[in-house]
Length: 368
Image: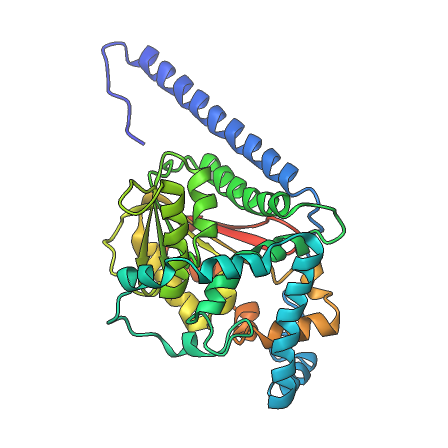
C-alpha cells in the first residue's frame, strides 16, 4: 500500500487517510462476508469434516494394505475397472446424463484434426501419467477417456448430493459456484488483485475452464493440460461457442506439462487447479505448487480444489465403493497423506487456508 503524501495540514490529511483506509478495509470485509454467505448458500448440504486426517482405506493403514492387495491381484483388478465405469454409467442413465450420446457426438466431430493442430509432439510424458487411470488402460491419453469426461463430470457432481433430486446442471452449478465463491471470498478478505489473467492448470476437456471464465468475465483465461486428446475436446467446445474456427475465442488452450509449463514468470493473477492433485504422486504435487507459485504475480491467488481427506462422506464410503474408486486412482495413497497446505507454505504462499466447499471437496487457498 502506498503511503499518503504529506501536506501542510498534516494532521487533517492523516485523519482523512486513516478514514479512507478504514472505509476500504470495511468494504473488503463486507465483500468477504458476502462471498462467504454466497458460498455457504451454494453448499448448504456440507456435512462437516471428520476428526481423522484421512480415510482408513488410504496410506499405510491395515485396511489400505488389504485393499491394495486386492487391487494388485490382476484378475480382480480387471473386474474392478469394469465395475468402476459401470457404476458411473449406471448413475448417468438414471439421472439423465447423456453419456452415450455425448461419446457418439464427439467421436463424429473434428476433434481428430484439432488434436493435430494443438498437440506438442515433442512433449515428453512423465511416467506417472502413462499408467492406467479411471479404468482406461492408457489413462488420459486416449479418445474414449476424452469423450467420457463430460458425462463423468456430471455424474461426479450428482453423486455429491445423492439424496437430492438435482438436475445435472443444478449439481454442477452448485459444485463449481462453491469453489469460485471461496476464491472470491479469499481475494476480498486479503485485498488481493482482481484477476485479469487466469490459468486453469490441468484443465482436462475445458469444463472447469469454461466455468472459471464465466465466474471471472473480465479475465483472459488459459487452459493447460498434458493430454492432447482432452485439449482437442476443449478446443472443439470453445470453437462451437465462438461460432467456428478462426472466430475470436475467450479461452486459449495450451498443451504442456503442469510441472514445467514454459510460461513466463509472474504472468497470472489467479492460478486454479481443479480436481487434479488426487491423480498425482507427492513429488508431482510439490513440483506443481512450485510452478504455480512461479506463475503468480504479486497479489495473485493460488486455488487448489479437490477431494477432501477429512470429508466424512469420503471417509465413510462403503467398502465396495472405496475399493472401486481406489482401483482407478493409482496415486490415492500419496495424495491423501500429502500435506498440501504445508507444501504451499514452504513455497512462499501466504495465509494458506482450506475451505470445505461441499460434502466431498475442499479448496486450498494461498497468495503471494
